[in-house]
Image (tube, rainbow, N blue to C red; front, side):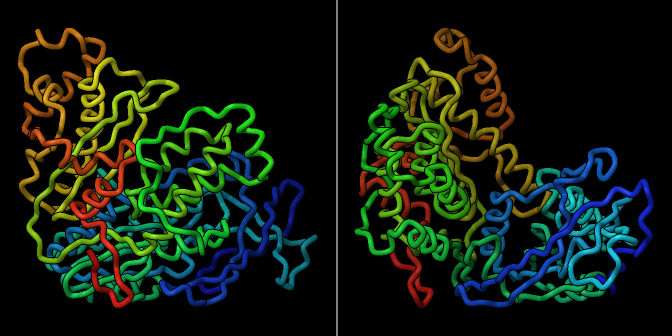
Length: 495
């Protein structure tokens, strides 16, 4: 902090508004769950800051996992280097615009009653600190030739040969390129940076790189989750939920029975959420279904949660595989389960996108309104996917990471939905007039050659498991088709 001139000691005046501080201690682990270091961090008590006085703007962008997976898939296809950097005490490099005064922290030999610390740089805990750091980093990156993507401002690209791509998450930076030597030298000249070498643990995701592929998994997260709920030695099951089972609103007796367990349902489901969005699409529908009962869970919902844990026990080492030297192609799948919810009769949408045969985007979402037909439910799902595809295409074009993405082939298993989308005539849309805006949006996307709809048999629909609880053969077929495979202890992929 002294080297970075984070603060200046000044006398306390009658109008000085002080913000408290506290020390936060943390143990950092590596990808093998071994202790790397013990850290102590001085933090400001940002909750006591006053808007308009101690801070104004606080928004700072956060990189999308979809962006990270897309970059990793691209890096695998081109056999690029994929390394990781850590900016030491990142926030302390960012200058502050506002006048902020801190109380003297414990351990500093100063008279707390007479003097305080006027901040010159941001520190952890301040509400504006993430924004200040992002502005500091992005401004410097622009001076050395990088440009932030409009579609994701936490992704940067430098076209100067050799080209480099960056994914930024606070002080962690993932770097992709053929030759990274120049950039590593540049950033070390500007910031105190720890070069971590080949990426192996990023955002809680374990990364395994070898000569044939890059894989993403969260084995330690799963093991910790099982241990937390005393399920480490449970008997595994083959599916995330009981096949074809629908969870209804619990009765009062079921709620009372659950309450006797005295467990935190909301926290338990939340612990599955990041897992389902980062590396485990196979539990995406399960988490979505269980999340609908956060306010009033019953014993059936809790048993369904434990069923998911039993499934994870048997699939701990499942990972997303990105094969190296694959062709640059992208395909998508869209599906819906009509009237899935037995209480509201709303349908569930599911879609996914693969780049270079690796899964980069997926989504399960309960539709906000009731659909009057299966074609309508499929159409709403297709509309959600089309929006995602437009973002994905723009992202890839901005970063020059894939070509020939327009039109993107979209696999759909409802012929009525396809016919309506491809039709230039409004005569066959009488039953769907109430979703006219979505109709015109999809037709516009098709007319502009952004997507190409392809009929696919339901038995070959890889997005089916995102919309309902499916049987063992169905989920295995989908996982194999999407390169969701098991990674052995020595790094070999098991089918």
